[in-house]
Image 1: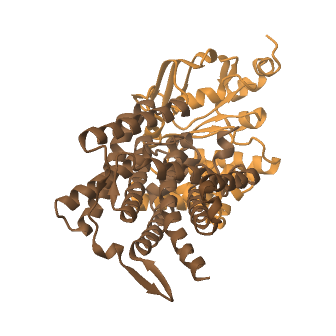
Image 2: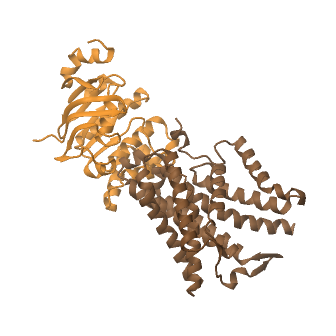
Image 3: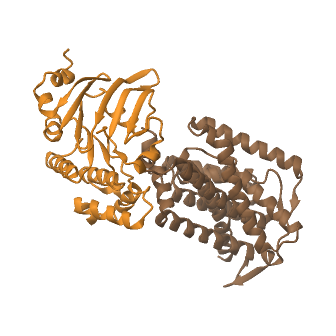
Length: 238
Length: 297
């Protein structure tokens, strides 16, 4: 079976700065794939390039059989791929339910939107409780739940999660990881960028380790957790 | 006391017109960071449509929607032709583009229509006045206040309850993430321009119905005032634009009415001095935009 997402020699540049230097990877349907590496390794740049938030300098991205390399960001949620961005980026001046409605923007069918609402409110009862509150008044953990919930509103086949546990209390981090396993059971394929390496490898099937814009190691989660590549990627030893 | 109430009514009428114009500027600015100085020319276009409709003998009730539609269509065309190609450029590039659009339109009006001010036929009713509780109020003032209120309520409902309106608020806060949700950049920006055209059209009808004439440079002064009002209220904030528009209207009318005779010559600088004073205490405006922090990291 062809992978759901496959990426060939992806490069990302910000002016003269090269953030991602030609990487290849793939994600198969039903997998959880973790992207690991120190700050500035190019993980977020990779995810942002996949959804078109930053331009792809060269390389190809194939999702679900189509070449989506140069698709504008607004076309990807309807196609089945979305990103929950780093730093949450909820719409602070919109209410919780309006944020979720925006997540379902590309769904025209009212019943389908209501079903999506229902699903997110079942996953996160707290969001239902706070649905009329401005998103800007939620706590960090609740905003993260809202960011993930908003991404889920479009019923993605592939959900990209950028640092979902960043800045959250340990107890909330546990909840977020429980949720990720739950999403897999519901048939969502996940790509996960995480600083919390042990928790990420705990739930991921496979992982890629990035360092200075290149993939320096790849393999199953158990292989990676035993290899030296991870330590050297974080600590800079070669 | 009567004079004070009378002037308050005038201030509401003028402030309301400023508020509509400032709101039009703010809707576009909040979404694409463009201060559209050609907004005034949208007013002028609506004014000329009113004039030609009058000459053609169309009833005023028909001319008004035609004038407003013309301004909306012109706004959408302006975006499509002039601003879309420079959409991702710097704010300065877009600002200069808007000046260019304004000047091209002014020259076209001067050459194709007339350099001089043209009279606009208005229904007699507009220059009548009614007496309410001892106050003599012009029908055109009442019309201005009522239309402003109607527009503000309609716009508020649109922004709160329509999916497109909510999407515009989302895009104003974080355009990139809004696109990630599947909100099309072109739709939201064209929508913002259509709204600004609607607001400029209504403001133009109110403006022309106070003066009964239109000239090629008609839009410049009110839009300059609206720009000041938008800054006063907090650039990019819709509620701020309304607050700033009304405050500026009040400042101008009260100064004109109550400033001693010998100071009247300095009315404008004194008015702007008050604006600067307000901004000294509230540098981000009366009601700052929520996106302000995000833009200026």
